Amino acid sequence: MAIDLTIEGKTARIVLNRPEVGNALDTDSCRALLDAVHRCEADPAIRVVILTGAGRMFCAGGDVAGFSSAGSDLPRLLRDLTAPLHMAVARLARMPKPVITAVNGAAAGAGLSLALIGDIVLASDAASFSVAYPGVGLSPDGGATFLLPRLMGLRRAQAFILLNRKLSASEALDQGLATFVCPSADLAAETQAMAEQLSAAPTLTPGGPECCWPTVSPPLSKASWKPRRAPSRPAGASLTPWRASPPSSGVAPRCSTATERQGEAA
Image (cartoon, rainbow, N blue to C red):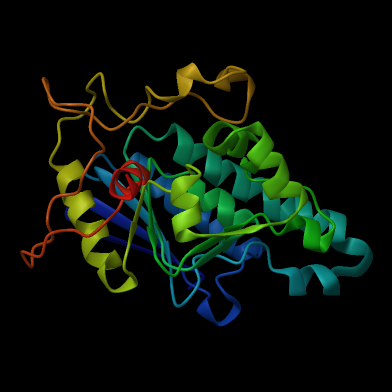
């Protein structure tokens, strides 16, 4: 299946599952993604959603091979592909349940938008981030042009998009695209630890997944999705970077944040 949805306890895991083509998105996979997102949103037993990719890549973006073979039918193909993709992105953004994107490899094009939509973006040290659209003569979609200036700043976003730059995981962390970076071998354990912590937290709290976005401009109600809240923080907790609980193996997590990296450099 192009999209694999598994539910274990309170956690749903959506896997982009076309590793032979870098998990590239075609019409069928976009429709299947939207269906999986709807199922996660509708199931009250699901408390956390994980989105990741199978194989070496997170998502290479749209299936360019299919674009080149479409000929004069390309406009219709693009409409059929982007309509369910944009609906899936919008539903993930509106979802009151925390979304973790576990970026296991390259995230390009529409794959970049899917990677950035997480409330927590956990990247392996093998991950990379790129817009990719200029290379095929298309404009960015999937919410990328909305998210990038707000995450990394307008000038950085312009250069990132127009010059078609590729960022490593550590560069993405420094520029605000990733929340944490960890070794590739630890990605599954780190993701599971975060999911367990979030699934055990109270729901519908003032600090839940929908309260961060109202501070951005223009209002999200006029963009492609509505505001979401940030992960909750216990009363009296300090405003230090959020850390995951240790994995069940007892090994302390080795994720790094941009703040920590700056402290180490000082």
